Amino acid sequence: MPPSVARFDGAPTLLKGTGGKERCPSSHPHPVCRGGRGTIAAMTTDTTGTVARDGESRPGGPADSPFIRACRRRPGPHTPVWFMRQAGRSLPEYREIRATVPMLESCRRPDLVTEITLQPVRRHGVDAAILFSDIVVPVAAAGIDLDIVPGTGPVVAEPIRSAADVQRIRLITREDVSYVDEAVRLLVAELGDTPLIGFAGAPFTLASYLVEGGPSRTHAKTKALMYGNPELWHALCGRLAEVTLAFLRVQIDAGVSAVQLFDSWAGALSEADYRRFVLPHSTAVLSGLVDAGVPRIHFGVGTAELLGAMGEAGADVVGVDWRTPLDVATARIGPDKAVQGNLDPTVLLAPWPVVEAEVRRILEQGKAAPGHVFNLGHGVLPETDPEVLTRVVALVHEVSSRRADQG
Image 1: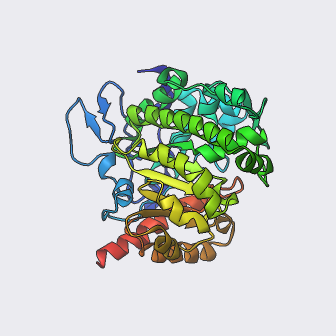
Image 2 (image 1 turned 90 degrees about the horizontal axis):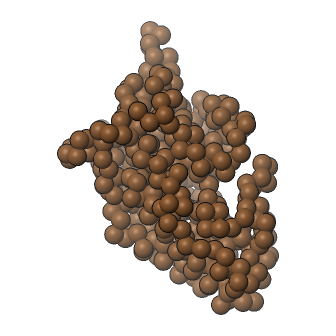
Image 3 (image 1 turned 180 degrees about the vertical axis):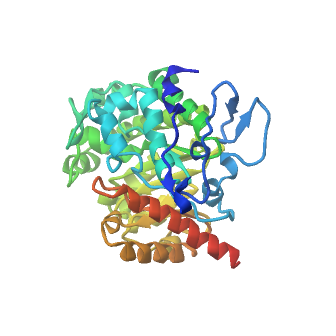
């Protein structure tokens, strides 16, 4: 057994059930919650995310999971649920691991990536895992000198200012991110029927970090470059689209069942600017994966007025932040896309009756879409009580399963 997975021989995190017996937090337990473990030698994975043991196909698997079925706009046993940033700062077990390990290092160690990715699956019983990484990982692999500074975020040593700077961003290969390839393969073996989501940052959001030199509230330098030197802007985003596509291909080839393209800062733009400066490059990434056989999710924050345009970029699922009701979002996106979202993360800090009412409201509004994946409208806040997330998963499963039983 590879040493990077030896740490998972212990029992999963379980909850106390009736009679004091331990149980999985989900009514639909996952392989990692059943005490079983996958082995690398006994499993192979194709690019659809369907796991086969000893090289033979079998029914079910990640490709037939509630999450993938919802992404494909197919009926399932219940509404699937996972949370952006579910593997992270809200979990004490995550904080213990990260106490002495810098962020970028933790993203480059397959043993840590595997453990951190599995933590919320064990604890919450979510319907999908998402690879623990960061959107700047492929940019760093492409030769950009940057660091993820605690309390600040990505900080770029030499921000992009010229065509020569764009040329510094080299195209990446699997060998450049071999640690991601290894982590995905380890995770697919551990997760069994639970799908793994890979992800990357969209060209606009990555470009904003590289031009600003770090996070920005106004994106003033980004917009100045867009408006003042559109040729350089498109060259930058075109190169980043190539890097992003290569990074997602590595994850798909290693076995992820779906991918999500994060365009976190796209909401800073008007629809006209989005269509001119952003849409062609996001489309290049998403359309470049049309033959990959996995669902593609596209998400941004503050994108209410951009949802129609984002739906045109080529994703199968459009993520919706908390500002737009899902039935309204569905009308803007169109009937041929599933939606993902969209509980306000701050609601999780409210008393449970408030949380429950909001979860039920979102499930009701999600019925307007041809497929619905329950999620937050952005990432889990660090101060969130993990037990609340576990209760939300159970509630989503209970309510949506009951609806299915009632036809």
